[in-house]
Amino acid sequence: MGELEGIGEAVTGGLLARAVEPAAGEAGDDGHTHENNCLNCGASLNGPYCSACGQKAHIHRSLRAFMGDFVAGLLNFEGKFWRTLPMLAWCPGDLTRRYIAGERARFISPVALYLFSVFLMFAVLNSTGAIDPDTEAVKSGVSTAVKEERAKIIELEMKRTAAKAAGQNLAAIDRKIAEENRDLAHLQRVQNGQVFQTDLDDSDQAPGWVKEAVKRGQENPELMVTGIQDAASKYSWLLIPFSAPFLWLLFPMSRRYRLYDHTVFVTYSLSFMMMLVIAGGLLVAGGYSGLASMLFFIPPIHMYRQLKGAYSLSRTSAVLRTFALVTFSFIAGTLFFLTAVAIGVL
Image 1 (cartoon, one colour):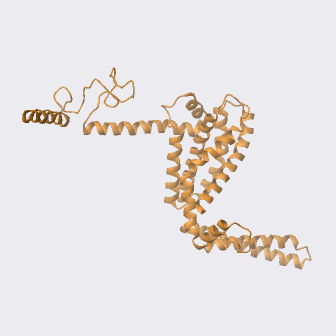
Image 2 (spheres, rainbow, N blue to C red):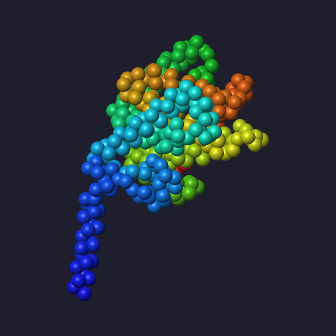
Image 3 (cartoon, helix red, strand yellow):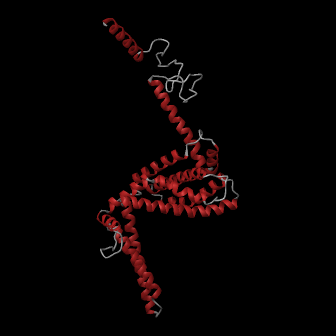
């Protein structure tokens, strides 16, 4: 028994030694291995890559190799990124068509690009304070709107006085003054932090959960706004299933295009729109609000180019479908907004 135990210890020690410090011919000083079978799946190796799982045949176990893999992975992503982004901006239809046709290795997948865009959009908007209701920029904007509304009311009151002295009918100007006073009251409630102010009471027929949600909003509006923002970021993927069926309605009788094709179209399109939001947030933060407002004219043009290129449409057909797609986009955006509000409130 003692001899057997000694032999076992010797074998175990030899294996451990080879694992920690491989013998000559198995791995050199650079950590380069010379195996005949894949270290990942065990399949026989007949080339630089495993034919079964795709892993590299020879593994470099060194710090230099690790850094090389890191740089290669980074450059590979950047290469795809700089091939995808220009096409998404200038030739979105060509990008969509080529990805659907099978050119996957050259471009970032629509899902990966969408998730990256969502993350970057909320990071930029939060860092610039564009979606924070308690920032100085937002408060200053509300204060400016209140001053402008009061100036409008004063001007209308002066016109009313002049009209009354001239014996003119005051019904139209009175209605206008009443509307401006209502708008001013809403702005003042926002300025005072009463974003969710309402007149619901125990006598109303509204469901109990609605009253409870409104009560929480009145007590802590900042917390409710934060909840809605969190819901919008966590469930941003809902924009894709909300939008894809509307795009299918543009080609209801076509057997050439599948729902998958429409989903790829929608995902790339939404990624571009979020990048526009990022650009707008950065422009506003830099004090170029006027230039940022010009970005609102880009989405219809981008939709037209993507529709025309992805589905090989004529100009007339692409224009008509673009008008319909813009309308559908507002509907899908409204559905998503209401869903985010409901999740954030409840």
